[in-house]
Image 1 (cartoon, rainbow, N blue to C red):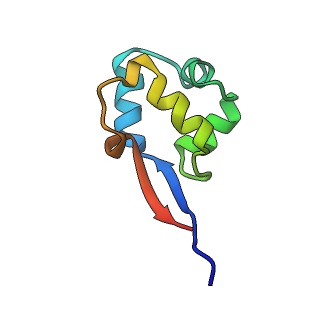
Image 2 (cartoon, rainbow, N blue to C red):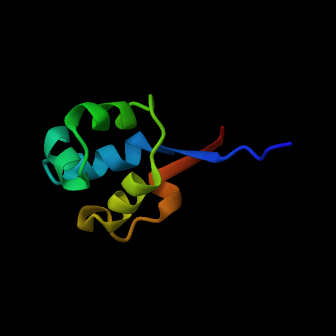
Image 3 (cartoon, rainbow, N blue to C red):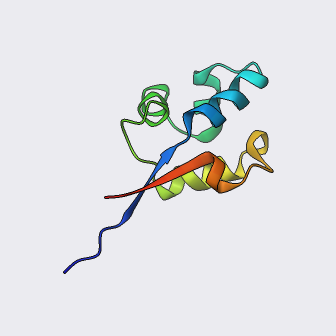
Amino acid sequence: MTAHPLRYFLRRSRVGAVIDQHHLSHEGFASEVGVSRQHWSSLYNGRRPLSPKVRRALLANPRLSGIPEGELFEVAAA
């Protein structure tokens, strides 16, 4: 039997609050994270899980510093 990997999804309400607080556009925040606006839209709206690279970029983003990982991501079994 194979183990099912965990899938991480963005907690839209928490990240959206930070984006609004800093008066950013989603396009601008996507650029800070290093993804395209279209890919960010899929991540933000829960259509795609977060890759390890994007999770690391979010955790390294100074606007999200101090926010625990559990508040930024939710985990689902694949």
